[in-house]
Length: 249
Image 1 (spheres, rainbow, N blue to C red):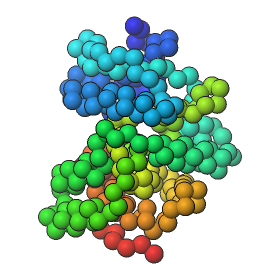
Image 2 (cartoon, rainbow, N blue to C red):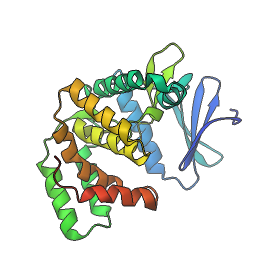
Image 3 (cartoon, one colour):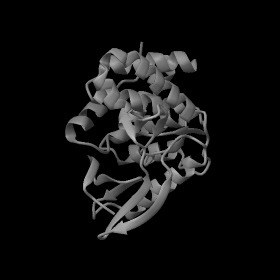
Image 4 (tube, one colour):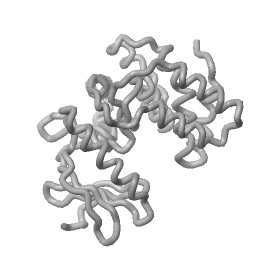
């Protein structure tokens, strides 16, 4: 294997290309359990029939864990949006269509979204009263079994050279309520300072999926709290500012 062609560098991992292989090499201190869980998630999502890179091998390279998958030649939707801003509406429409297709699938062996969120809310620095309120609100939300990506954003969509979209990075995949995943995507856009795109995205998703906007918004404080346990201090403060938002107009 050659480790010359770096595709991307992300927190805790570096991604390389070697011919038809995509090699994700994790840092030496990265949790073995998290690596194996990511590989298992990806293997389970493969079974849904979605267009995702197939896993070829899980191994160690120079003492570091690595996941080897198919390399998908193309550009991310994020790259295309930056290169062709005049096509933003077209790309957002495609983005929403892909997400709705993901959420039409089920993968019954994945972790339940509510269980994961409850664990994360318990880990936050919020006081006991705020945590209790969030746990109560979470338990009151409808239970679904839809496939949720967990980090659905344009950088995780590759438009293959022949135009077919592929979805990557299934480390955070769960089964649960689709609107929670939509709230997560909305907050990702907001964190990047793209509030106008965030609003366009949310309105488009709600229209295409026939989902009430208020329903998605009810998830936002819950999702923001569960996401606040990771990231830098600036992101954490931004997310925690959403937690106190109880009602929306």
